[in-house]
Length: 420
Image (cartoon, rainbow, N blue to C red):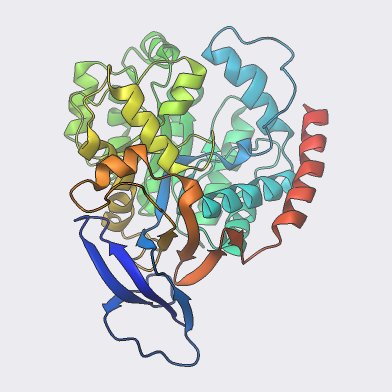
């Protein structure tokens, strides 16, 4: 069945050209859209009147963490963290070790639902559950499939919980990549030894994949690398072959020197900026100086609202980064270029949002970016279409029972907090 959007204004996500048109939306993993002035439909088409509405490409998240979904409102940790390493130790590493399959499924479902309701139809996720590794990626994938959100998953391989669990992470990754598209995940240089790094790079090479890793999120990552390996983080990763893959994603990249920036500029890898997470953890602010244009935006598990993240990158970047209206939007949309250039499936033209944006000022291609930063919000999303199927209609999810899933998530959250 196709969807027929009538009487809407289509905004081309690349050129920002506004066109009053009808749109035929093909169903399928990478279906097309056809702009037409024809009003004739067939019986099986779902017709949606978009009079007064704006239609454009849906959004995507370059770096998410499903495992954080049940953290909202939980009690204080056993020790008040005094630095970033203690935030990891007493909050996130305590949480991820407590996860079991039921909690992972609830986390994935509520994350996928939040993505959908925020117009995000594709998410790149970085998962960790050290005491429940086997099958965890497939649990997440099935949950995202149920909601209708595309995904590119990886398991966060790390030596921090012992080499046996690191090996389980490698095995889970290999098994998952034999069945689905994905990446080879690593936590960060300071928790990944040489042997695990070597095996991860070999696996990425064997599976024609790439590495997804946090890089220099805090100064301690660089300090550890200098003390342990006598090189800076990006240099270590370059020597290991991580930078050879165009599918590689490096998260954060805050504390890089000029040499590291040059290494990244001359490589095919992508950098993902997570401004709100960096602000929350007080680890520093992103600076694109010396990097290539291969920068995209993520939320690092803070939330699933990419419009909000784009605004944060712009506002916080005023005094620390070279970012203007055009650059903020380019980074917001760059995840599509990452997915398309690497031939990943599920982010085709038939992923759309319909916006009910009744602005009090003129809205057109010449001032779109001003509206993007100072007007458009997730509350303006009326319908969301993923792979040619409507997954949010009039603000309500159509694919799953949201109330039932949220009720179960509250049960799993209490279980998780008790285990922590």
